[in-house]
Image (cartoon, rainbow, N blue to C red):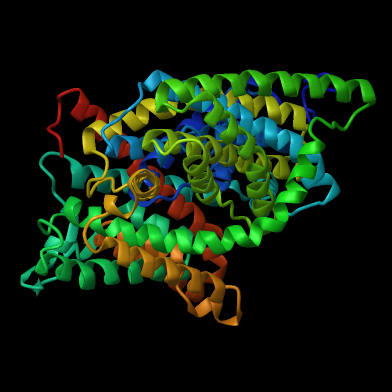
Length: 582
């Protein structure tokens, strides 16, 4: 990409430097591991912009002091952030949190090299779409992209001298989580995995239904970040599913046993119905954005420089996108059995749908990536093919591109507030896609082999959604367990009602349908730990609003990062035969 700015010089113009790229890559690798681990456990993942800002700045400052180099600039931190966030988004872009584990649950797994290559192609397309939309959404319409603005403010505060306290909090909570996870998962384990309620439920111990609180720094940290409403919503879903429905299912013989896999195979249907009901309303609300999104894409390639520069940027963008699109078609065919014509339909849908996600992220800071992926899955299943793996592959194309598009636009918004060069950010983001595609897949494979997919350790809620829809598209209601169709239909209606009511004045008093769905699929003790974290953070903010505003988010992020890293270490030890499988 062309750049009309002068060459880099020592001092204030430092931006795309080797130390910024190194910092971004290292922090991004951490974010990728965190997102694989957290996504398989909870279905949620974090763009990691604030975490990347703090850790990237700390790394850059350390290098500057050790090598007596020029001071770190906000633009350098912005480049490091852009690369790190791009790497951290690759688990979602490569389908490692939904489509790939859905295939694993169905007994079909593409080779790792193919998944990495597909992630590289989809991530590249996602960055290209973000660059195409940048001028329209960031400059002309000036959409806020709140995460981007918040990140720019954090970077500004770090460079003004506010780095030490946030950095110490994040690293301290991460160290505590590392130690707690090792004590819990080491051999011998000195901490239990959960503390269960005393007494029986439906004639069986409460532990049979997972009713208790997980001893999990990650879950507590996730609760600190998702807020009280989501934390309580997860618990509502868990109580309905595991304290009320599960004993009835066992008592009536609708499931074979009180084990987590047997119960989750039935409960995932109402969970998916609930989330899809809410998604249907959200998608209807986004319908008006489709026309605007197509207009946005008509602006693709417009640059900020002269006419000749614009044409060069447009040609390079289109060439890069074309090569990535061809790769997606071939890899989708090889890995998912997705016919190139069906793949072309998914690619065509990905352009407006990724733009719809971008507009939603710009206005609300929420990007309905999974919803758009499942919409594509349904459309391709209805028009082109109902083969389960193929429809999952179609959904993976849209959800992967949209995930990287949203993360890239958040980074570009932060950069625009700091005066960073979009072209230099783009180079960092594309490098991040390459680094992430190489790192995220091995992390996923290690964790999947050590803990399993669809287990109590890794329930993979997003994968359950993809798998359930694929089975319905292929076999209709006959593919569902006995009684699950009625439960799914009732849950769908409830999801619609909650989403509609959530747009009124009573929204603050209603549970979130999406969070309730997570509580239904995930083990109940995870849900109670998430809620505990949310309540602790809320109490902290009420008692000490000043310190909490500075330390709560870094503390939660550190707890998540610490358990994720130690979880990967344990998986490596299991794979090497040094430690027995948990």
